[in-house]
Image 1 (cartoon, rainbow, N blue to C red):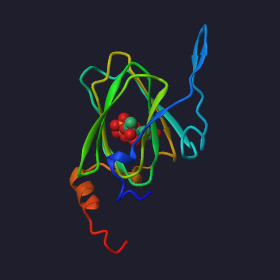
Image 2 (image 1 turned 120 degrees about the horizontal axis):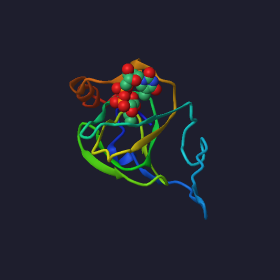
Image 3 (image 1 turned 30 degrees about the horizontal axis):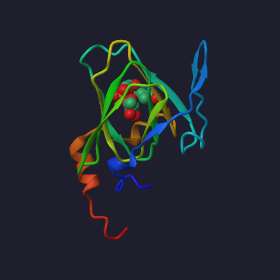
Length: 145
Ligand code: T46
């Protein structure tokens, strides 16, 4: 998938497995099985103060799966053409974000934890952090591709 042509509709909500146990549930996630990429990094956002937003950028090559491991939040997706807001509020649902999609995470509930599985290591060079630069990239002529 190409970052320039990817659209918000390419970001899909995945139903993750849930193994029910009388003492609670377990959700296992394997690379190239439940998620369509090799997992090279896991990180999580937590202790997010009320009213704060995270993200506000796009990635050039990175695939990610976002899970509300605890609590809830919303993910605002934007492909410079169309926008869509996806609520995440259960640990057995994961939002797959493909490369080239601007995202902002908002409306975190108290104690929310955003677990992220990523297809590559952290690299600042993979980020579009300037929305104008991102828009120019997405609106670039693709006729000779
Ligand atoms: C995304 C949302 C959900 C690292 O050193 N290593 C890492 O793996 C990450 C993710 C960040 N950092 C450093 C880079 C910055 O100095 O932590 C600082 C904050 O990073 P950032 O502004 O990218 O954080 P968020 O929470 O706004 O965004 C992160 C991811 O970057 C992003 O891909 O989708 O979480």
